[in-house]
Every structure is written in C-alpha cells, then in structure tokens.
Amino acid sequence: MAGRQKRLIEEPLQMPDFRLEQKFLKMGFELIAGVDEAGRGPLAGPVVAGAVILPKRIHHRSQLWRVRDSKLLSEKERKELYEIILDKAICVGVGEASPEEIDELNIFNASLLAMERAVEAMSIKPDFCLVDGIAPLNSPPSLAVKKGDRLCLSIACASIVAKVLRDEKMKEYHELYPQYNFARNKGYATREHKKALLEYGPCPIHRRSFLAVRAVLEKC
Image (cartoon, rainbow, N blue to C red; front, top):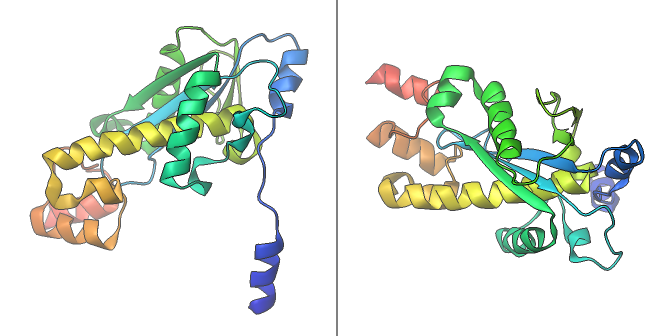
C-alpha cells in the first residue's frame, strides 16, 4: 500500500495543453471552442455548461497556463482563473439545463443540452468544438475528448467557467432553501445533505429522477 501511495504522489498531474486546438487550427478551422459542464452528480440544482474560445496564440508567460481541470483547483484558484479566462478569451458562453429537464431527459442528455446552449449563447460563434466526454454536439462540428478537461486548455477553461457559475447559483439557492446547506455542499450527496433530505423532503430544485431523491419521495 505504501508503495502504491508513493507512486501516486510521484506521478505528475496531467497538464492541459493547446496541441489539440492547434491541430484543428491547422486544418482550417478559425474559431475553436472548448466545452464542458459542471454538476452531473449532485442531487439538486441545474447542470451548467461553459464554452470558451481562446486566442490562436497564447504567450508562454500567459496566466492561462495556470488553468487546470476545475476539480483539481481550490475555490479561490477557480475564481482567480475565472476572471483571467473572461479577460483573455475571445468569447465565453454559458448554458444550463434545469432539474426538470434533467428528470425528463436524463442527466447525460441534459448535460449535452446545457453544452449546446452554452455554444448557442456565444456572441462569436465557433466553427468547431472540443467537447469533454464521450459524445459530440449536434452542431457545430465537434469532437468528444475523453478526460478533455485534463488534456485540452480550452476545455479546462470551460470547466472552470461552468464550475464557478454553478457554485454561485447554488449559493443563491441556499438563500431560498437554507435547510439543505447548498452553499456548502452545492447539491452533492454529502451525509449532511442526505440527512436534511430525509428530514425535510425534496425541495423544488431536487432531481426527482435520482435514486436518493426518489427513495425519499417513495417514503412520503
């Protein structure tokens, strides 16, 4: 066990780079967006997606090279990088799918819908998208990149945009439904959240198709 832990500690973190974007730029595409979502796993709240078009050339000293997959960053780091992304990106778009749409479509399809809405919301439209996950978008032409938020800089930027904005939205929901402490758990299935769910039942933003929420509803 100690040997395994040592190997994990010594293994370097995957650093997102710009090689995939450059590949498609050389193929003739002009505006390439990285697209990602946040909030597939929680029991409550929307799934939020970000889409980011970065400049074709990024200076080697640019603060954008600090960007990582949002899950590897602290909240403070995400917020700092979010401001940098807004400042440096050519365009940023945001979209979401509601808890009701998640229940109707399932979380996989709702996540794709949120990502498509993020692209549609962009004031400058991309002609190609790099999408985190296993499924491309319907339009524009796109490529699904497994673990793209750890490999591709524009996708990693999109993951930060989506995560920061979803967290802020869950803090707003906390003001409406403080008993669940969404400001802290962001809707994820923490022990505290599940205890509150059993005590108070689901609120309007809970995902009723999710097993933990459905189980509470069946007891009511």
